[in-house]
Amino acid sequence: MVAHTALKGHSGAKLSIEIHDGQQVVRKEAADAARSDRLRAQAAKQEAAFLAGIPCPRVLARSERDDCFHFDMEYLPSISIAQTQIDAVPIDRPALLDFIEQNLERLASGAQGTIPVAQFKAKIDQVRQRCRASNLLADLVPAIDRIMDALEGFDWSGIPASSCHGDFTLENILYNKERGFFLIDFDEVDLSSFYLDAAKLFQDLWGHWCLRELSLGGAGQVALLNAMVNIDGLRASLLKRLARRWPELPAKLLPMVILHLVRVLPYCSRQELAVLVVMRINQMLVEADMHVDPAERSLNGVV
Image (spheres, rainbow, N blue to C red):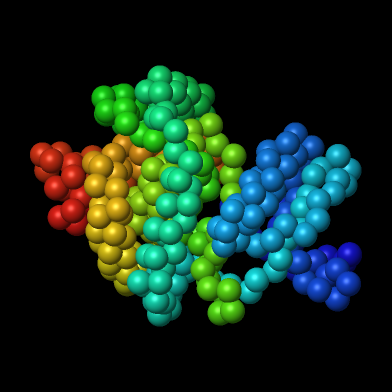
């Protein structure tokens, strides 16, 4: 197998297109031996998802090299849904909404009980401590502590425990002309719920995480405004769809989206990115305070 092209990824693993017996495949390799166990779990999760009928690249092979685990999967030339919104590439929105709803339903089908509130409280405390330990975030600690205090005050009961994708974002939904929409980058997480998968989508649709480079001035304010308009339209359409299928979900979105966003803070490599995240969370909290009923707030398009 010969390396062909390096790919850009966000998971911390090395990605490349390789040639094997004349066929292109994507190789995902742990960055170091310490991260191999997590990547093994991700490969197993992707294999299980494929067998369960969730559209995703088929895992072709697994191996070890220099104590680092890697696996090969189908190569499907594609574009991410995040990129379609940024570049205003036309997509079949009803088909995309069907794809999201159907796969959330697959994940929800095995739901058993709810995630204990104590697990959310423990995660909030863990993120708070990680933020306080970061030198890059030192100046932001007071603002972050206020956000964590707000998270502590939310009602974390009633969130179903179920299978999940683990990183169900617009950047991880891809489109291929022959195969349609499919998912990549399954992840093993300690809080597993299809509700949290839905909230990952709103991390992009409401929290604008997928617009972070545009927001930092990479392509100008007009490009950012156009992308935000596209994202907002998709957000409104998806929210209506999810509210019909799971009426209790919209009222739970705000704390879950904020939790997803604050969890990225200790991993930010630039202070300006961390500032952007904190500012967006504060804006979301202000928007929420302007409306009494969270479900009504969501359905009226504030989310």
